[in-house]
Length: 627
Ligand code: BDP
Image 1 (spheres, helix red, strand yellow):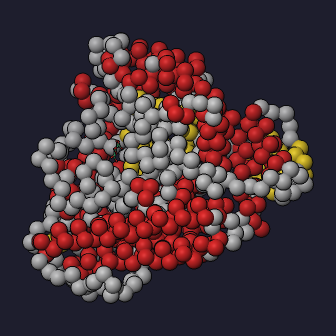
Image 2 (tube, helix red, strand yellow):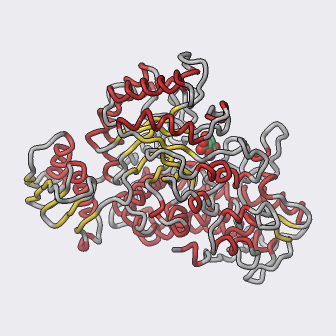
Image 3 (tube, rainbow, N blue to C red):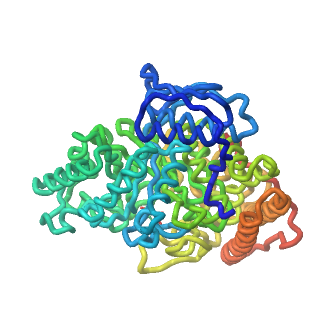
């Protein structure tokens, strides 16, 4: 049992009789899946053009009905999913996705490596795979995505090589597109803004230059001649060294609109990332820069441009407040970008279920203000796809939430557990472990709103004392915690950098005021004295210490839960998780020792806890964060 089958563990039954109209490849897949795995007798697939949403479907005991073949396939996976679950009695009814764009962002490089990938090499560009089973692997990938409703893949890294747009690569992208199309998945590409110049076709990449504009038009036409349903481009421009319109004195809107104009005749889109700092607003508090870069451009983007922003204003930290750009760009289409790959949450070594983090985001940012969701993928060519067996749950949860952001993290966890490990496992304990795992990670890495205390470059372990004169200050941990003899935290209140002013009410005032700022964001928004009394009566220092210890206790409790699960889990997956939980515990202790040891040099106060004598403190977060 190597985990390769993910949550797709249907038993082959071969007893269903499927009645379906003539159709294409997608219909064939839908029929095959039912014939093999459906546990009823007759089942009917019906195309009904009166149903408006292409991807939506109606599913009841003996029929699945949709406007389109892909809608039918989604209905089939819903039927098979409910068949696997113990709660299948309330199955059925109408289901349609909240968003038409449910997209994985792969950060895969053309040499087969993956930026922030922790599960092997690229399944798209690795030469190792380009053997006989390459096609099979891509098909399995597409099937897994279709089973949870994902319908788009950006195949390459946002730090994009211009070479992706050469004939050689476009031909291989066409092959991938052909394999994944029947599963309803469109291909998108990340593009380097400087491509025409870098590839030697133009003297500039200025978006207002006619030769540049024509190059892009021709390139886009070439792409569509190979891939008629190509989705569009994802662009990281003027960010972390990438070229962009600023290089020519132009705006992000100029840049995005040029690409949008080339794509529009083919119905393609541009996903333009707001992850920009160190450009025009260099020197300002980093978390304010994205909005400051973009706010004057609100309403200036073409209709087929979507601004894509990370959930938090910094960079995928274990906990951040939501990114205020979502409050402000009222006349611009927006997408949220979640990070499924666990760059800052223990990579594929720690068990951290991220659905609770994404739900926290949705408790502040209404799903209604978005037009799509992107997730930075955690998939590689490892046999089990994601490295840690529980990291598969994050891929699963991303798809389910992109389909329906109102699903609870709890429900999704339980669906995943039953499908992945079967119904005999101690599901509630495992569910509790998953649901509290992100809070545990916050506790042992950086509680109370601390952020970016990570070791340079690899972002795995702690380095709160990190400072390198040769690096931008925004990459240095000391910039973020600002610990000194008086206290700790980044003053972003109205008396500090005033980052709070970017938030809508009531959050602006709530975050601004030390008395009302939720403890979870305390040191994100305030520089707080070591002796400051928190709402629970503890001093800041004692609470900080307590939380690091609590995080460790949580991991110990996960180990216990996993011991109890041993009889119900196959040896291979059980051992793998067991070993990784020990790594997680060792790492959690390292985080505590290093971080508290360092902060103690400022607080000069004792740590009241010891390794063995810690009493377990149940996790409780502010009610707002629990929704
Ligand atoms: C950061 C990663 C970096 C990415 C960047 C991005 O450390 O590797 O290129 O985000 O999203 O989180 O562009």
